[in-house]
Length: 131
Image (cartoon, rainbow, N blue to C red):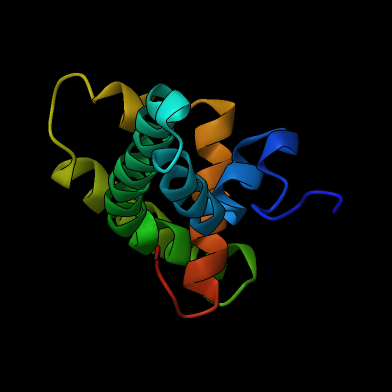
């Protein structure tokens, strides 16, 4: 047997890999639970799952808020709508946005969080949402 039973979790290199293997994480955590000497790893694997789900929920909320802006910019960029329409969408977004500092997860997206957002955008484009 050459491995791979858990989607080659030992070879993940970035958040895209983690997101693509979410179901493997749960399987791994379940298996780790069966090993009395792997209890800490099981708990921490479940923590990774929880953190990914929480981050995706935060990003989904932010993406939902930004969808009208993205739509307006995309249509302006492609020549289907006016710049004024795009400006109005951005102004409406800015008016709805709560004043003051944004939570770190929503305001200062890291490169890894931006990858998650790109995956969500792809899911939206394909008619779905986070699972």
